[in-house]
Length: 413
Image (cartoon, rainbow, N blue to C red):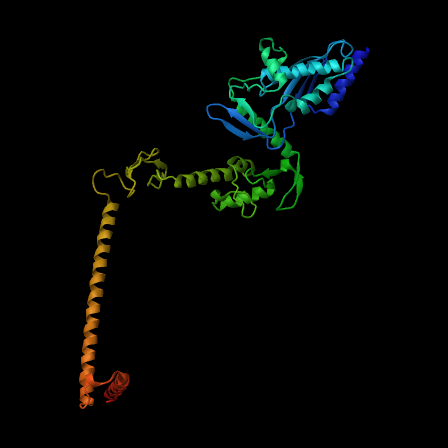
């Protein structure tokens, strides 16, 4: 084995021991390989997608740069590795700038293995070298605006002579925003499943693959506890309250989370009750009045006719009976009768109240006249009008006591 072959074998063996199978692929039959490099993004990194409507989103991961290489027989003594560099979110100008930098690194390390040096540069220094900052602007057609660094400007000036090793991967049948967000979610899930968590309900400790993450609140509980909690809520019919088990937390559970945990029968019940609850909130949805059907029916605004799409029953949405066209609805007639009856009762209550008031006034007048006559009979020398205000109370008290005594005497006899 020559010195070059030995150096190549040692380098490839070292890379295989450092990176897993998803990051490093080697062709066994030849000295070829492919390295997928995910860049380390700073916290709170954002993407600005420029399209018909600009969209700004947070991301923690971006799709990897792909470095494909082939080692010539005289590498590393004389020749550099033959390579291509590809990306779906960098422009071709930016990728060509990176290729030029890889050439410079080879020149600085000529005669030595250089793949690991290239990998470290691409993984740790790409953002800084291309002057990429948050928010990163990306066009919906996959072409990113050129950066303002001196390297990018120099590459842009020679755009006709761009390095053929720079490959921009753009899928015309898929939106770039969808690709970026899907990759970001997949990577976040991968990191979550490899992290150890502690359940706040059963206090067990395990990897994230055995836990459920509620996206809005970021609370984490083991799948067993969440499954039991969901099944109880579904059996009680509380599907609209299916949320995070954390006390006073209202972060909702997604249908995908529910389907993943509960049985097929429980999910069917959950789906049916959730649909019914959602339809009940819609003002333009009624139900077929036939008990054997009960299908949801959409009705047009300001119309009282409903047509069931299942049994074709045409009914009045007010009284739930057979549609009666121009004739007055039974429900409206009942409401009119009830309204007239309420008005009549109100008028009668007013008359009764007025009559009671008049009767009370007459009784009080008669009682006052009787007291005057009774006082004049008992004390003829004293005129009622001459009784002073000071002795009126005593006179009234005496009259009351006398009347009470006489009533008791008459009752005894």
